Length: 512
Image (cartoon, rainbow, N blue to C red; front, side):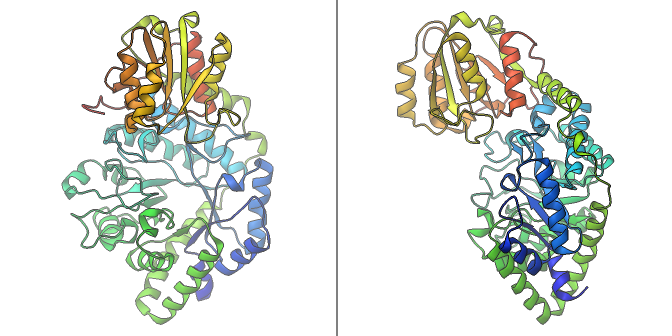
C-alpha cells in the first residue's frame, strides 16, 4: 500500500446522493476512503442501497466499511421500508434490558442485508442535564448504571449479527447545554466527576469503536480545542487512562464545534497528530479531496506524522477487514412482519403516563375542546402540507372528533404563547402536543398559562420527558420520540387499546 492509499484509509466520508455520479466517482478515486457514511439523502430503498454499496466497492476496488447513524428514534437514517426502532430513552422506559437487545438485533440484521456493517451507535452519554439540547432522548437515561446496561445489550446484539458498533460521544456530553453541531460546548468538571459518571460506559463496555466529540474540558486540556483534536483526550485519556485499543472515529469535522474555529485542513492534521484514527468529512466533496491532498503533503514532510499514520492505519485496516467479513442477509429480512411486531411491542411498552387525574386515560374524546400541536423540528411522520410539521397522531385524533388542530411553532415567543392561551377554551379537555417545551420559553409559557385556565389540560410530550415537570403541568403522556411507531403507540393509549406501562427512565428534575 503506497502513501496515497494509506492516507485515504483514514478517511470516513459521505457522498452527495443515492447514486455514483461522475464527481462522486472522482472523489472516491482520489480520496480512497477506508469508510463511507450514508445519510438519508443517499437512501431510496433497500435494493438501491445494496446496489449503491456494490458500486462503491467496484469503483474503489476494495470493500470499505459502510457506516450509518441508526440509533433508533429521531436519529434513524433507514426509515421507509425498514423496521424503525423507538429511541434509546423510549427503550429504557420499558424497564426491560432485553428490549435493547431485540431492537439492536433487528436493526443489525436489516443493516447487514443492505451491506451496512458499521452502526455509529449507541449513544452512551449520561443525560444528567435536562437542558442539554443535543442528547436528551438519544440517551438511555441519567444513570450510568442504566445507560451501561442498555447500551451493552445493544452492542452485544449487533455484534452477534455482524455489525460493528460505536460508543459516542467521548468523553461524554450529556452534561452540557450547547449543541456541538452549532458551537463548541465547554464542560468544566474535574476528572473525578468524569470518572465516576461520563467515562464509565467507555470503560465498562467493549465496543469496536469510540467517537470522540467536539467538546472542551478545561480541567483536562491545556488549550481550548475540541476533544476530537486534543492529545490530552485522544491519547492521554482514551489510550493511557482507559487503555482503549480500538478505533477512534471523529464526529463530523464540519460541525460548528470545529468549523467555527478551524479550517478543514487544520482539523484533519490536528486530529491525526493528536491520536484520531478515522477523520470524518460528511459533506462537500471538494473539501474531502482538498484535505486528503493536504494531509498527504504534510505526512511526506514530517516523520512524526508518518509514524502516526502507520499507527492509525494498522487500527483502521484491522477494523475494516473485520467489518466487511460478514456475509449479507437476504433483503427479505427487511421490515418483516415479525420485526415490525417486535418493534411495535417495544414501543407500546415505552409509553409513560404521569397523571394527577387518572380519568384522562383512556381519553374521553367527547370532552376534548381543543387540540394544539407543535410543528415538529424533524419532519418525519408528520404533515407535509398546509400544517407542515404537525404529527400524524394529532391529525388523526382531530379527525376522530371533528376538531381542528391549532398548530404553533416550537420556538414561538412568549407574547405569541400568551395570545394563544387567552383564546383557549376554558372548559373541557385541552390536548397539547409539545416538543421540548422545557427548552423553549414560548412553549413553557403556553403550558403555564393553560394551567391557570378552568378546564383540564393533557400534555403529550413527543420528545424529552422534562416537559412533564413544567410548572402547572399535572397530566402528561410521554413517548420519548415521534417516529411512526411511537405515534401509533400514543394513539393506542389515547383510545384505551393499551395501558401506559412505561416507567420514567430519568430522575425528576428540580427545575426545568
